Amino acid sequence: MTGKKLRRLLAVLSILVFAGLTGSPMLSVQPAAAQSGGQVPGGWSGSTSDAEFWRAIRKGVRGTVSIPDKKAAQLVQSDGDEFRAFRNGKMASTGVTAMIIVVLVLFVFFIIRGKIKIDAGRDPEGQTIERFNTLERFTHWMTASSFIILSLTGLNVLYGKLFMPVLIGKEAFAAVSMWGKMAHNYIAWAFMIGIVMMFILWVKDNIPGPTDIKWLAKGGGLFAKGMHPPAKRFNAGQKLIFWSVIVGGASLSTSGLALLFPFELQMFAGTFKIINVFGFDFPTVLSPLQETQYALMWHGIVGIGMIVIIIAHIYIGSLGMEGAIDAVADGHVDRNWAIEHHGLWVEELDNEATAGAESQPAE
Image 1: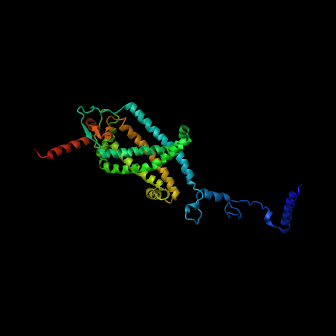
Image 2: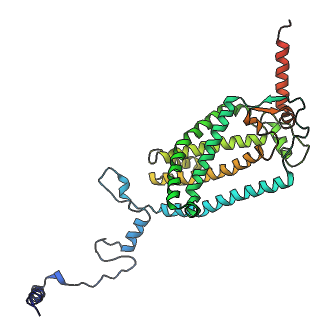
Image 3: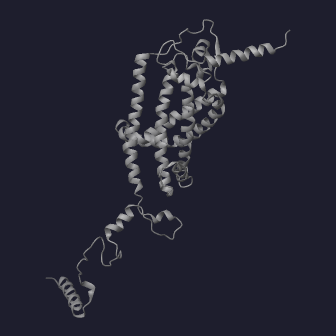
């Protein structure tokens, strides 16, 4: 044994002898206190067992901090696990199922019904009626195009990670997602402006009325050839689309703003208080992080719902009905198309034209 190792051994023995003679607890080993009913006799956590302590942290119980950021008092936010499980599980699976179902239903409908033709054929003299002016068409296309971009970038966030890295690689997917997020954040403003403009321009023509009940009772004439229930400028189906876009768009916008400005805009606690008046039991005290999680969850649910609705709208306005796309293309529709699908509206226009002609002074 070398002199160095011998000196180390003598030093350790001296410490052991000293501790034994003086009764020093520095090296004494106390047996672990047995837990009884979740309690321990003392210890660093007092009378609370380690299991109870960590369970409280796991459930998000807050401590106290002296720094300005009071969110630091919460070590673990357990709602995140539940939110993530719902978002990646039930919400994602239900969303893709709903989109597949609407596409399949429209496909079967097209196979059975085919394209809805103008029964009388296009006007032989080429007469058309202005359906939407320039401002209305601009509003439609601004809102529609921005919604399509928002839908694609939003779906990429929810589903892209499942297959995009395999198709284009991880680096390309990361770049697409980054630019998609930026596009989503900025183009959202165009969508919000479009929703407001649509409401101002068309709300007066989308108030439900008695003719809408008759239109719905006959299925809008979509399921039988030659059946054209009377309708004004917008029929009941278009009114349902309009209000779905206005209400859904407003909800998307408010939840989107809450996500653009997290911890600043909080909308769910107050909303839950109102809803609870009708007998529900939603939580009315929410942390800023919980508010953000609810906003993200609601934003996704409403977004998927609107995508399903707009898929049906795009189908009937393009492939599903002859002459419908003309309304938002150049703003003019064939007169026979207008008579068949919006007969009461055509009558109103003709009456206005007749009244205007009669009011003109005779030469």
